[in-house]
Image 1 (cartoon, rainbow, N blue to C red):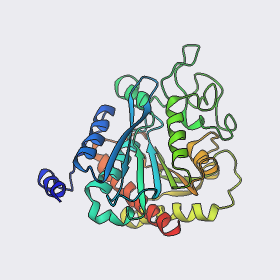
Image 2 (cartoon, rainbow, N blue to C red):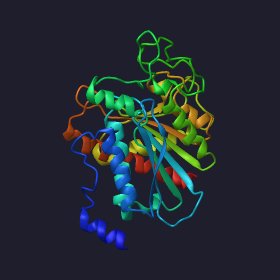
Image 3 (cartoon, rainbow, N blue to C red):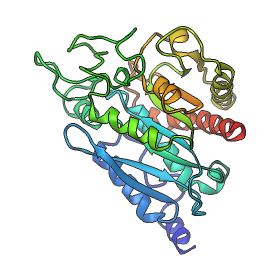
Length: 318
């Protein structure tokens, strides 16, 4: 109880600890995670799950309701696999803010489920877009021929190297020299498998285009359980439409966007046995990847509306 009173005194829930009036740098994001763990020790746990190629600490946050029950079902979320998609980590931070600092309103989302969130999958690339090249997409591990980086979302070992993935070292969609060549994608893979059996919903945040996408990314064929995937994604789109009028397109990646084999969502669904795996492409801002700081809060608040509705649907189904 002390913890709660103290925190209410420190900040109002509406503004919370995280700034949504600017795009946070990677070190600031990690500092926020640590601050949450320190302020809410019974509910929030932060763990360094590995290091990026450039040796940045990759931290994941586990959010619980503090009842101490082990082995609850899990919603696993990540963001920022593509460096330039700055609004995606901001969206993940807003989910963290809601689940932790707005707990009373969202307690139903944490009764039978824990949430595990990795807000920046590609910290090296993310920092590179802040310091050197705003439109950089890939990781930063050198390849050869003076080329750097792999498209993390073509690097997962399920139909790796097939349609929509490039074998050219310098290409933006370079699939990597091997599947899971990148330390960052290995970390996501290992997290997925560590949640095997418990993980019911994998959600990965990207930008831009306002899409809710589900498998398959490697073929236009649809999974047998397409109705379940579609039901969850549609719940998100409907909630957003009702709250802001925002229009999200729902469907399988290949059919409504483009084929892209080796993606994290296909892998979570097929190899790590998450019954629901969805890629959420946040809305365009600025010229696409660069919403203004003033757009961050409305975008992430809208995103949360959709995520909450999808989570409620998953919790009811599984």
